[in-house]
Length: 258
Image (cartoon, rainbow, N blue to C red; front, side):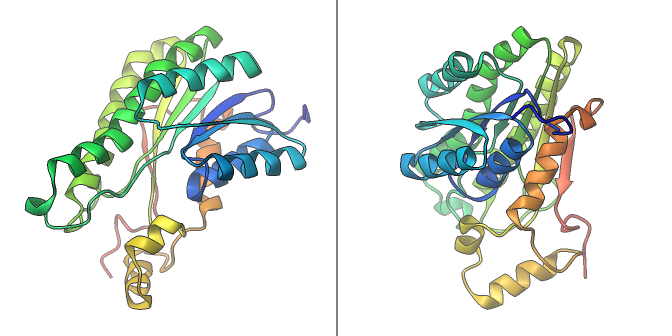
């Protein structure tokens, strides 16, 4: 690539949960801005399609399929990044699940543990291996894709999801303080409603979709690329003094009451 004027020219990035939705949009945008990508998710065939799309557009990417809540996978992901591209500058820990959507007393311990494992433990494991690789570079940008749910707003039946996403924000703040002196910026991106398969599963009737749109001050939900542009800002030198921030990219859902 090597074209000047690209926001991530010469950078190497990991994006998890890259097979669909916001993660896929982030991977495509980062690649178009000059980053070399290692993309991760469970579904290998979707990752391979993403890599092909990036390469067709003149970018560089490779894929590793696996489970982000498995520590050996988090380690392997960073090792592949170093062996393929020589180091790591940016990591977007985006993989996540909605988990059980039901009254809290009905949530099983297994469902709680699985959601925490996929959303929060995976963020910790990602950082555990990504941070040493960034320290070797002398700086880096670590991003967690959290949610306004559990931070500025709550919804009935979503306690497990809210707790896991709020936990990511606590982790982000601790890491920002711990590694700020060594040049690593750590931030969270908090999307509002975004047009993804997960959003369709959550709001599965036209009436529900209209209700969700109306919750936002902008009276619509985001396209995945709108979230990707915010992630690009956090990843890039444009955000060089931004760390420890829970950045709401939520169409005003946090402040809207009309």
